[in-house]
Image 1 (cartoon, rainbow, N blue to C red):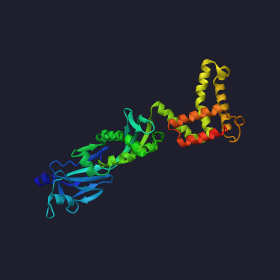
Image 2 (cartoon, rainbow, N blue to C red):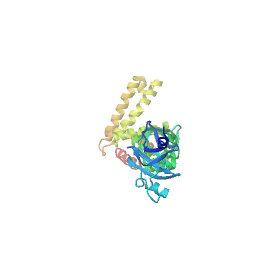
Image 3 (cartoon, rainbow, N blue to C red):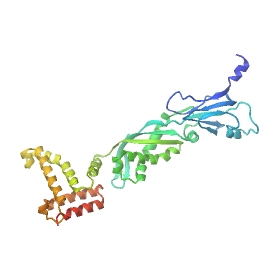
Image 4 (tube, one colour):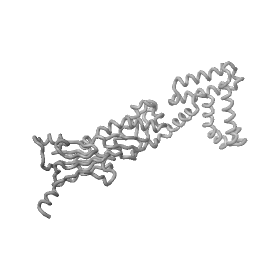
Length: 343
């Protein structure tokens, strides 16, 4: 090999990155002691961006395309070098490539229950998990804040930072959404949207774009889970008082039958156990529904509604209101409807 051939080997005339593996966010072109040939080419593929760094300062950022490296294509670098005329010799500069593809199926979760503040229930401890996707949107900012001068920066290197970012913003996301916590917990799509709204600006601060987020599971304390189940049941029957009473009766039947069957006493226990308990519950529900749907001017004896039944129902409604399942307006409306039956 001749001397001139050896010298030519020290100059780079083609700069490109073929991305031979997944999960790499930033990659520095291996310059060693080589210099970039004036008039050489820079190839930036779709889903990539390239950044020229000169003496520690970011000079130029290139999006997808094929570039011939001259003073016209790298004007900022030309300015930093203080070239007062067209340079025609090789030059040194660090070149970083960034992958702007979506990084999908990134996991997030709460290893331990976390405490959030809710206006209805105070401090609530929950666990949740899901996934999200992101991409590098601002390579200049990402290089400055995160990847720096490392030869390679991967998704795995960033994973812990992003997981922590999600966890520390869950409580703020719930508060900022303005949606009652139980509604968020029962609607995973709304929960994910609240998290996305809160986290997107935090991702942008380090040059990333949050593309999507999912909540796959929310685990609540047992007491709160029971309240949420009741709320879901109420949503299924709507404001129909007859259906509400049927729903409440259906919830009580298993406990009633179990208690009656265990001690052998009472009508259900002495007759047919669980089957009699179910039948009795159905009769009670049908009678009360018929009474609630009767004329408001009819006496209690004609409608089949007893004063003690109405009072028991009002107590249950009051309990639901105190737990935040019914609003004051809903309670007042149902109370007035029930009291009319006693007139």
